Every structure is written in structure tokens, then in C-alpha cells.
Amino acid sequence: MVCVGVSQLPVWWDEFVSDSLGLVSSLTWAQWLVGSVGWGIATFSVWGLFFTREGLWFHVQKAAIVFVKKAPLLRLLYQREVNKMKAGIRAKKVVDPSRPRVIPQHGVAMDQLLDRMTKAKDEDCKWYEGKTFGFVYHGDQEHVDFLNHVYALYSQTNPLHLTAFPSVQKMEQEVIRMTISMLNGDDTC
Image 1 (tube, rainbow, N blue to C red):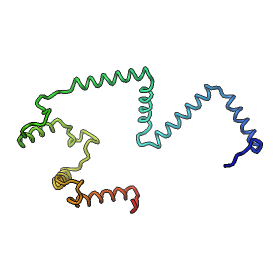
Image 2: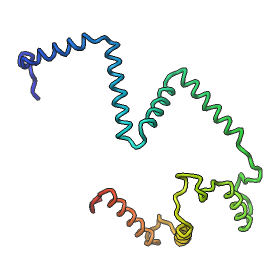
Image 3: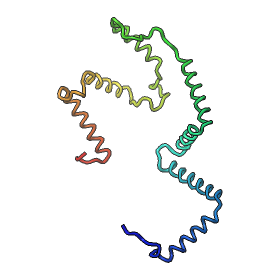
Image 4: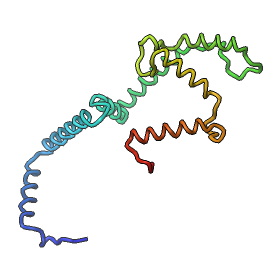
């Protein structure tokens, strides 16, 4: 490590420091604060617009929520609204007395179980009508039938026991190798 004494600093250093201090001392604290905040907002905006996947508006909302959660009075108001929403959700919750709360002593007949499951499925979103986004990733009916066939082939295998199910291990290794390739990995990964 090299230590530089004050006497060894170049001549231009004194001029630079005095010019810089003169500039800083000529600014009022208000001007400095406005400039700093302005640069912070500009930097945050550029970063949010160009360097994040979510975009600027997402990060503005996130920063606002963090601010609200940290400010004491706003935190109380925020928590009050959250509690109102939770109470509203609990009030709308329908308790179905026919739903089992414990494991039944005797099994349910298969046709009754399938009937119950079919009725429950009727309450799900109708993704196949194209009125949802991002919930289900699917193709056409032929693709769905193919997936159901594949699920049926491997529904009774256990990937934890690879010696008993080497086909599962082989597929797992292929998926891992494809992922490594997609991420530009090499054979040492």
C-alpha cells in the first residue's frame, strides 16, 4: 500500500478541491436536495424502464407500498384496509357442511367420489373458453389427450426410486441437459 503525504499531492489537486468546495458551498441545501432527488428519480426511471422485466410502473407501485408500510400513520391506515379485506373474504366464505373434515372411517364408492369431483370441477374457471390468461398453458384437444396419456403411463412411478424406474431417471437427465444447453452451459455442468 502506498501512502501519499499531503506535500506529495499534485498542484492541480489544490485547485480541484477549492473549485469543488466552492461549487458545493455556493449551493443551498435545498438546491442540493432537489438535485439529488431529481437524479435519484431519473436513475430510478431509466432503470425501471430499460433494465427490468416488470417495467417502471411496477417499481413505482412497489416503492410506494414500501413507503406506506414504513410510515407510522400510513402503516396503520394500510393495515386497517388489509384487515377490512380479510374480514370481507371471511364473511363471503361458504362453509359446506357436506365437506369431510376428517378421514372417513369407511371409503367412498368410486362413482360417488368421481361425481363429487366432477361437481367441484364445474366451479373452476373455464380456461378452455379462452377467458383466462396465465392460469393454464395448453394446446388443442389432441395435445391435451396426449398429455393425459403420458400422465397415465407414469402415474404409478416414483422418481425417488430411480433404480426401480430408470425411464424416469433418463427423462429427468434429458430435461436437465436441455436446460443446461438453453442456458449456454457446457458438459462440465
